[in-house]
Image 1 (cartoon, rainbow, N blue to C red):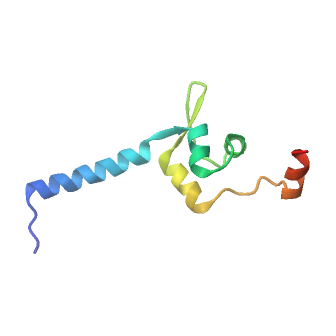
Image 2 (cartoon, rainbow, N blue to C red):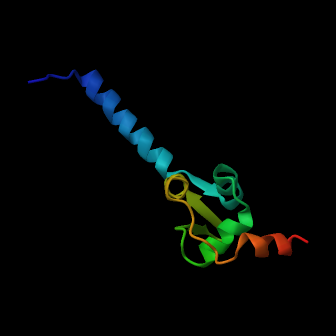
Image 3 (cartoon, rainbow, N blue to C red):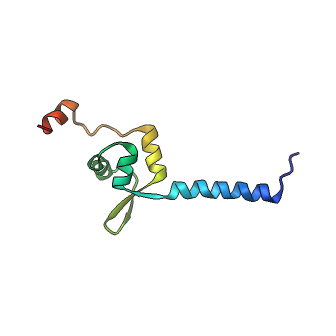
Length: 91
């Protein structure tokens, strides 16, 4: 049986709380886009489709760090436009 000191238990609790607070941190669309290396317009399109969980604070749209991590891990679904069409739009 392992016995932990109260200091070790307190440190473990603080680490768990810090991790949970990091996951609750809210980022703007611009910050999230920068972290994901996509354009803010791409994120807004996915938010509009309901593919990204957001928090609305007045007119602001915020994304949790946990959601950004999920998107980085899983990726975003296609918006239904080919790279050729994207290139033609840029002309």
